Length: 328
Image 1: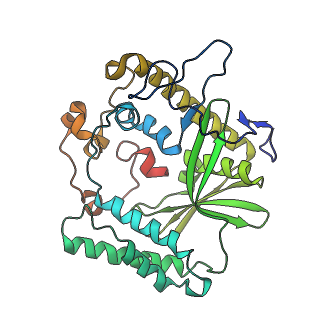
Image 2: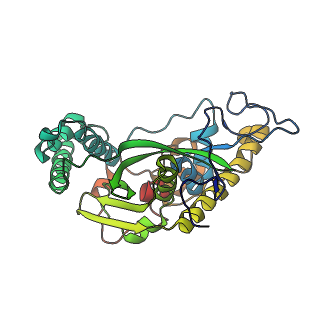
Image 3: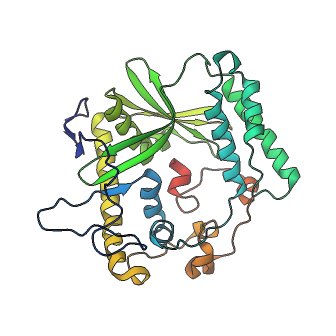
C-alpha cells in the first residue's frame, strides 16, 4: 500500500510518537557505564534509538561507530577541520536569516550573518580563513538572491521523528518547505562536488526525513532536494509512498545489524569482534584515527584544511567520502 496519511502502521511505522525512554542501546548489562533495562519474558523489546547520522556511521565503519556511540569514557576525537567550519557557518547563516524580520531578509544580511557566525577553526592560517569566509559570503549572497524572503518555510532546522517496529529515529531537516498541497525536504550542501538527482534519490537521510515529516504533519511529503550553494544547482527527486517504505526497510536493516553488535558489546565490551575497522581512504580523515592502529597504518593523516585544497574533477566515490558527507 502506498504511504498515505494518516497511517496506522505504514512499513512498520507505528502511529505513536517517539518516546523519550525508548532504547538506550541493547538489553543486557551496562553499555558504556550506563544501565540498560533487562529483557523480561513477555515484555516488549526496546526499540533501537537511531538517527540518520548514526545509521550511516555504522555503514561507514563499525569501529568508528563503537568509539563514537558506545565506548565510555568516549575516546577524544580530533579537532574540527576547516571544511566543517565552513559548512557550519553557512548553515547557521541560512538558519538565522529566517529569524530576521521579513523586510531585513536581504542577501547582504545573509553575508553579514556568515561573518558573525564564522568559525575560525581548522584553517592553515588567517589568510586562508579570510579567503574562505569571503567565499562563503558570496555563496550565501548568490543563493539568497533567488529566495523569496516572504515565503516562510514550515520549518528551519526542524527536528522530526519516526517510529517503526524496529527503531525510534530523530533527525533535523535544514529546511522544510510548504509547497501548497505537499511538503518538500531541503538539504543545503556546501561541498565542492555538485550533487546529482541520483544522490537525492538514493539518500537515506532525505527519505527518512520525508517519511517523518509526512507522518508528523499528516501532509504528503515525497520531494527531496539538495541545494548546492557553490554551483547554485538543485538536485531533486520525487519519491513515492512505496519508495519511502523501501528506504524505511533499508534503515531498519542497518539498525538491526547495529543492534546485534551493541548487544555483543554489552557482553564483551571492546573485545567484541563485531566492530571491525573498515580500512580505506576515509581512515586519513577519521576523527578517531588516533585510537585506531589499523586506520593509522593505511596512510598519513590529512591536514585540517586538506578538503579545501583538493581539486574536484569528478564526483567522489564511496571509497573516498563517507556516507554522512555525501548524503547528510
